[in-house]
Length: 435
Image (cartoon, rainbow, N blue to C red; front, side, top):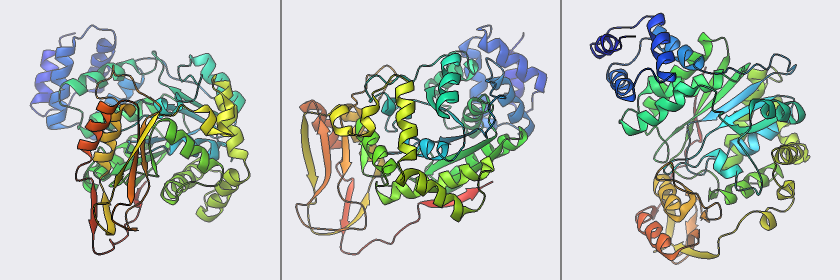
């Protein structure tokens, strides 16, 4: 296959045919097209975009570059949720068991964190013994047994996207909305879903900083879902401050368990409920938001959702006792220090990006893909924006292992806390719905 003319056409803003996209992606997945040529194509797409029909065909080619799962024997609706990621965003962990407890099958494939954004797989693997590396047979068995599986992408699922994802990271083409949306949607469509709910984060701690760009991404992904006749809904949710009170891995698991015990911070519960209501709706289980909320609330306060989570943990090799006593099962950092208020007033802001980067510097995240995560370290938000504070009052608590890493984290947090004389206006967590 001669690739250069295809690159030239896309460079000059012209469209490629479905057959050309299919052949190009297939050849790339088989290593018949070198990375440098696909990097040139990615940059051409970054600069010129893809026409709607091209985007559908690009996604289709990615989807069929490897295995596609078949859950046709599953008799209940199959729905998944995807978040574009944010600081303290552990929503998938309590959400999936709650929705599964309401009668929805959830074949959830999640990712790992890079930079300031934590990954669901890293958080789950802080549970001793828990494995997210399941082959297709194991994946199906856990789903059949528990109604929920929490795993990573297998080596044979959408392999072209895995190669391109790494290439985009190294060639400054990550921010392309066509490439982001096709990457997310090709993996989700490979799950043989009936419905999909997307959580597109907006703000300082999110990948999308502006509401306009977040809306564009949401509309693009919803459009791809519709083209494949998968019911798809997106919520734009705020990420200017950390979600919940915990940022890290083991500490976010503990906070997720608190939600499944009928507790947990109000902002985390609100976002979880909003996404759960949408999941029950696209599944056709309950389309009335009030009744859907009641079902989800009953699932978490009755202990039914926690039981689902415990079964999944056990089925995937983890210690289910974590759902009863997280503190005795999860790893714990040996040292703690607090960041305090410099003066009295109202906490007007807590920069999510700086908190996320500081947690990464403690060892809770990766600057490079090969970095090792320390599941025990992290940051606890002791006071949320809007609260009145006294001089010297602890605002953040850092759990750490190495003093040198603590110093790095503290330097990042300089300027992260804003205290003023007036109480800030409250802002909504759920900004917009796209369907």
